Image (cartoon, rainbow, N blue to C red; front, side, top):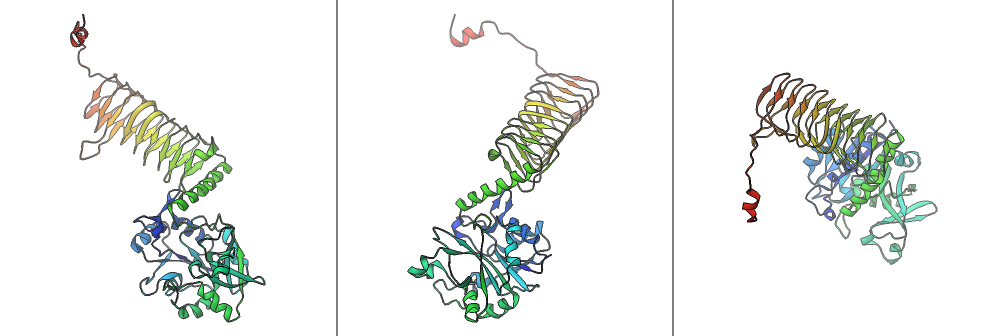
Length: 432
């Protein structure tokens, strides 16, 4: 790892998100914003500290699930609000410290390399924008940063500056140790600004260099509009990654794939598919407008318009249109259309007819349906769990199979005797 420590500022409320959820926990492609930036940070450094305050317990719990080795520091945001206040109790291990924001989910390890290679006491990230509204302005003279001013504190000339603060900094550790204790909150917001370190360091003759970065990687998320725009970019990255690995996608811009999904072998995704959670798709076809949630598909074809719900394992199987599978294991099965298969295990050679339902819930508990090999299930069949269908069974169309075991080789038939009431149509409608 590089000789650098990373500090991620994730303490803010994010009031512009208009949500009770902590800002950094809003998700992009199935993972929180803070997850994405933490993952990329750990590609750069093994010393990553996250500063938390608002909903700190929820943030710590969420991130610790995936990154147990990350350090958390709780900001005293009452007595020391602001980005400078967030740095008060942080202790970095390495001599160079990179400070990131937890609401920049599009940052990548590659995009951070410029901070590692630029030699200066402080490296400051900047954008050059035609419309700099909302950003702190950066005054640059002779190739160095002169000062930064927040928009709400800027005068008319400073507001005309197009170089803006992208919010990422690399400091020598000694600079933070020197200037953080000297920060003041004598400003319009009564906050401690990390940007004031720039001014104090500049006054003392230290070298502060700007680093021009691209807006895509360093885009901040401050609203639901920003969140949606970042999702578009993240989805394009994920799709391009998997197409480069050999996945075929029809109309890729219509396909949604979450961060945890893995593809193996040659897979085909038709338009309007949605694949979520930690799904694993191997040598399979997912047809148009199908949804796969946190499941495993091996050598199978799904859809169109099928729904594979979480905890399903489907292997060597055909799932047709309007079939829903939930928490089930299917191996070598055909379920062509219009069925619900929940909490079930179905073995090879079995055919599931249209309209088949596993009745897995009695209003209190869920129960399991087990179907053996080479079973033919006729259309409009209800399997009332818990029930076991042994191998080589035929179930006639319209049958309701109640709890118990159907023995091997049987025919199951439950129908009432068909009746004809002559002339009923004419009596009912009053016709002759």
